[in-house]
Length: 365
Image (cartoon, rainbow, N blue to C red; front, side, top):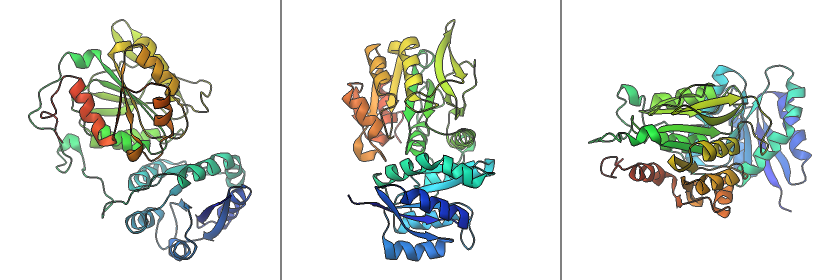
């Protein structure tokens, strides 16, 4: 068996040692090098040609974000970030995912040795996923294409000659499920949605403490309002609601209105939040007024429930393999017969708008 070759980059000798030990315990992977700063890591990558690197964010000489930006521009490869459970850590992690990191592990602020050992299963799973991910070269700057769509950031391609979608937006609901690679895929769709789009509900696999920064980042880039879902809140047109990390999120009805239900619940398909929970509720509550979207991610979470949505009358889009970072969840949705259309990521928003009654000319990007 060809082992997954990993280089660990972290300024903490303790963390380097722990990660090296965790990786070397696996029969299918080995730590071929450990560097305490990005400059040493750069030489190791050249010499050792690893399959994956784990990368700390805060390091001497060059921080992890600067190093990641250069790496993804010059030598794109799978990277798993090692983040801290802080507000700044969450914000910087979102930036790392924008730059092309496949995924991240949130390490504890206290009890580091015990915490990392408790995360061992998650760490090695994410390294395995990263090793098989489709990695793309970053742009020269690695910067997003806009500053703020709501206040006139000019670089984002906004729609021209916009004709309001109208009454349909109060009846329809768009629901999106994603995992590995999903933060950028979701951004790609939401930044193309007009201010009067139907309400959008989203489950992205993400731990507690990170969805707040994710929602805030998207809100600054989109014409619609993007926020974390709040229990009991009415789902409005022109708004997107993201499942809070560590909670289950589903849709219910109160009178004529759709509402968010956010609650503690059991893990479903090993996830909380789970796409299965959201999609199953949409099949039951929304039925033929729903549009389903399954994006990049590992595993099969949501595939069965997406088929239930289709059987209830929803129209479903699934991201194609070529544009996925990881094709697991989309593949399972297709195999379950849940897809009405399989499209590249960049085609999904236009297809949605066209299906809602808008012409492609009105929403051309």
